[in-house]
Amino acid sequence: MRKQIVRYRSVEDTGPVPDGCDPLLWRIYRSRGVNQVGELERELSALIPPDALDGLDDAVSELLAAMEQGKRILIVGDFDADGATSSALAVLALRAFGHSQVSFLVPNRFEFGYGLTPEIVEHARRFEPDLIVTVDNGVSSVAGVATANALGWDVVVTDHHLAREELPAAKALVNPNLPGCGFASKALAGVGVIFYVMLGLRRRLRDIGWFERRRIAEPNMAEFLDLVALGTVADVVPLDQNNRVLVHQGLMRIRAGRCRPGITALLRVAGRNPQRAQAVDMGFAVGPRLNAAGRIDDMSLGIACLLADDEATAEPLAAELDRLNRERRQIEGEMKDQAEALLEAWSPHDPDALPWGLCLYQEDWHQGVIGILASRIKERYHRPVIAFAKAGDGVLKGSARSIPGLHIRDALDEVAVRNPRVLQKFGGHAMAAGMTIDEEAFDAFTRTFDAVVREHLAADDLQAVIHSDGGVDEAALNLETARAIIEGGPWGQGFPEPMFDDEFEVVSSRVVGEKHWKLVVSPMGSRQTIDAIAFNAVETLPQMPARVRAAYRLDENEWQGRVSLQLRFEYLEGVAV
Image (cartoon, rainbow, N blue to C red; front, top):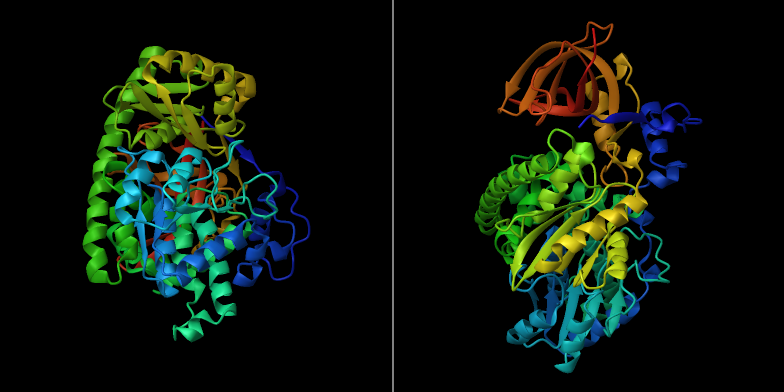
């Protein structure tokens, strides 16, 4: 699909550059809504204090009472990377606080589905818990919390997902996205929420002399920021200033070698250098391997890797996660080919004639991979996509991915209002959601969903847009600029990695790995030559023209101990000579 390159307005109007700030970086920051240098602060002192998070004191009181009475605490997480890091952080922090009666349970998505359901509560009987603490789930678990309460178990819910009208009857409910919560950052991931809860608990324990009485060294909460950084980036929540502080501090610990052995092992098995770890490594190397456990097998494997105390324990677990990720990629590739065939049959050679809200389903699709499939099709056709798979008993599970302009959870809510019988349950965020429907309701759901999408989007919204930070002067096309940009992050959702656009002469080109273009290019009117790579570009550009317009990022390329500048072409189109 041809894309439109649109430059941020701040490319032309950055205002005065603050003293000591690089003009190019300031231009980039301004385009991301930064107005003052103070908004770029990344020290822990810039974090929003825990007191601002509603429900935190109640959660701390429940946890403290359980610890004082030696009660059994069960952490119930989600089966993605955010849930895994949240579970590991909760277990590690409570153990570090001196409470040994803590264990974790993560639902197998194929048996129990998402969240604290009545079924997973029944499954939790074998742990004989006194207190359940949910992480990265629970705000919609009305029935599950009621089941736990009926069994005499207390429940503390920590979550970040949007709430429905009815809230669970938990002892405490901590969620920055609850109506009326005054916490300034609504973008906390689940792992960020439980970090704040443990931060508040550590403070309460300190105030009552807990550590002194038990002769326990008071834990440094910064020790858990590697997990916070991984879960935050992998969950693709917006990197507002508070999240940038958390991610930056976590990355600094990873680079310095002060992190969980499991994270180091996952970086190495992915071929990444822990000493040069960036947010992109968390999102595209570590996160997918951790997620592979929940998608293909059981996320308990991923949590075990994060809990590993040494490299000898972590490395075989990381190797198994890498194997599962390779299996996931093979399944994903087959499903993507099948989805493309479906779309071609619907609308041969004319993607514009496809439904605006795409619903895809094939009987043999893997339930754990439909989310990735929806994301891939969304990227290719730039429209909201829901991919479905069989979940047994005449039920389909769907995973949705959206585009700017359509809040996908709100769209599903509207579908439910219009046609109450098509949706059993749903939940999610603005850009991603999950749902369950009756198989017989698939056709009715697809019609209603497409109608809702058409009412909320205009035709122009289906045009894929690449936002660019403009061109880069020839003098700035160097390794120093690339490093300054890397260090100027962390970059991610809501604070995107800088993208530039320019025209280049193609000096040489060759295909590598069957799918990628390896290039040597020269900026127009320049004698400077620069290495470039265009990943997965052969399919859309099978012949390399002599001149291209490219949207690109500045990157470091490390080869045989030598580090040099490389342009990472994210989009290419030929230019008439």
